[in-house]
Image 1 (cartoon, helix red, strand yellow):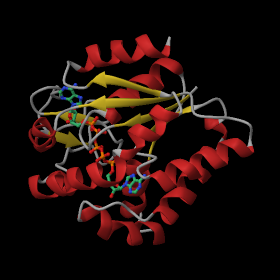
Image 2 (cartoon, protein in one colour):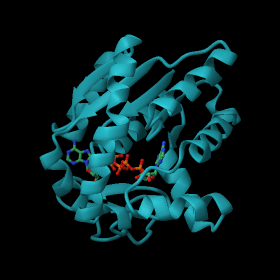
Image 3 (tube, protein in one colour):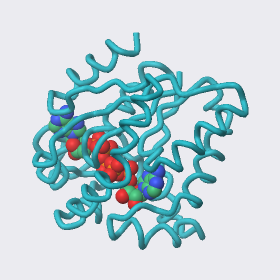
Length: 213
Ligand code: AP5
């Protein structure tokens, strides 16, 4: 099963992608997580990507496409995956389609998690992320057992640099301009399903499962 998650920054793509990955036994592939790991590890890719990420801009397609196609070639992705944060532009979607056509495969579902812009900034300022294991929480909606400490690995939670309100507004602008056209792209392919991302996380997942069944 090959699933793509679409939606504005903070719509809940990562939260739902992890649930899908757990339930269906496929890897959760987040380009944001891979890029952040490269920044943390001080790689050449990380140093090129950091400036774009800190400003709320997209990392250039040529850097991201090679990184993603390489990740999808790993053994654990042979039976499918949930892509979170990729594609982000029409050229990225076309590159993914071309890579899949070469091996006689295609995307099965593009899930659009819909949340109005006005909810996004509020949601992002409450997000807390674990730099160790990638766990994601929310101070009100999805609190940890111990404040500021990751339930999964005990790591110290942080507010991501790009979750500050001014950067979130910039990311939303970039989303509307460069990523939202993918909704039409996948609608035309008959692959798009839209869920209401303002509901409780378990209810959003139930709605997604209804489509994947
Ligand atoms: P990335 O990490 O992909 O960020 P994003 O798409 O902006 O998405 P987020 O991770 O911010 O949000 P999400 O939708 O996953 O929401 P989450 O589940 O965490 O990318 C970061 C940067 O990397 C980009 O800006 C760009 O620079 C670069 N990049 C990455 N991919 C790229 C690409 N393909 N091309 C170019 N550049 C790329 O939820 C958000 C919060 O809400 C959490 O606190 C969560 O707990 C809470 N929450 C979730 N669901 C609910 C709910 N139903 N109700 C209440 N709260 C909820």
